[in-house]
Length: 461
Image (cartoon, rainbow, N blue to C red):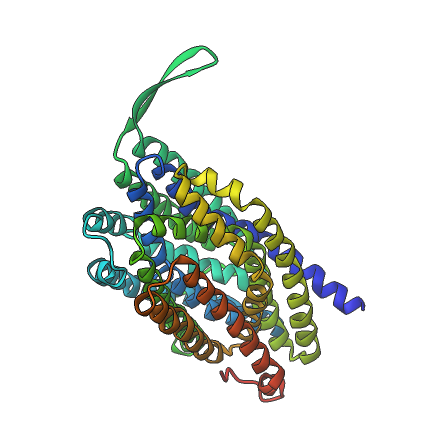
């Protein structure tokens, strides 16, 4: 019982900075969505469409960092300080390589994403502009994501949180001055002139890009100043042995995230067939739902780090206790948050739009998904528990199979074949999350992961 309580306490200690971190990452999108909402419903739809590209760029980048987190966490469990310091140098090399690859991916997607997403011809020009500018500093985001993953490997979740605090403050300030035109407001009976460039959607994109650039620079500075594993005074060159471990764990996770992201983009393109209003409603609902499952994303980060440490310690029993209690904690948390989402859905959507039909449709989608939140929690924790010990290929194949079966195949048939409405899209999404949750649980219960905790532990996946 004492060991169980200690593990739960550790999950919560590691989770809360990660929860705040995820809130702040999502706020970047929400701030743009909220601020451009005053421009037009078309602008809202464009921000929503571009946010779906996150599943093909930013999410894979985050997943790539799992390789770094798992490697360093395992070294923590082994209490090998030299290995951790060597890994910090290779994290910089890994970040540089990722920045180049993902910059090329952005260029490619600028041209093909309007086709994949089935963007309305009236929105294509503004969509391309917003997408290209927002992702122009993707190299900086690579630094935030992968260097942040290194900090998480040593159990330091606060650094990424602090950086994202700064990113969000900068993003809000930049948006305030770049989106809106020069105007006069009355505050406590006094007329105040506020400066502004009046760039609208372009201003929102510039604000996002500039804030990410600042965050990436700060993350590099913090890495060098960290006394525990700073690469300062170390020779920076590629170490194939360490990089291969990052790649072996990180690449399957990133590819899984990318291909499920492609599936999500195709999934969203089906919504585009339903019209701009349905797309705006889908965007708002998707964004609001994300606010309610953030706690479990924090638990997931805790589990990844703690699972890696368990592997380094070769403590199979501790790992089993970790998974069991993380699942119970996460599912119970999302059961409560799902109920809150159901109750507050009408109020929340009215904060995002004053369009009556859009708000009513958004609220309906939130009520539909609210009851399935505990199964989403199960899915996330089972993914994290496997990724933390290096079984990213298992997660990769399970994710791909579930995503493409439900969100692409079945959803495509329902929308294009039977001409159903938005609710069928959300039912497919729920089916994907629920099926994947039970599939990963079954694979965990099968117990093939136990081989990793033997005397000859290797990074087999």
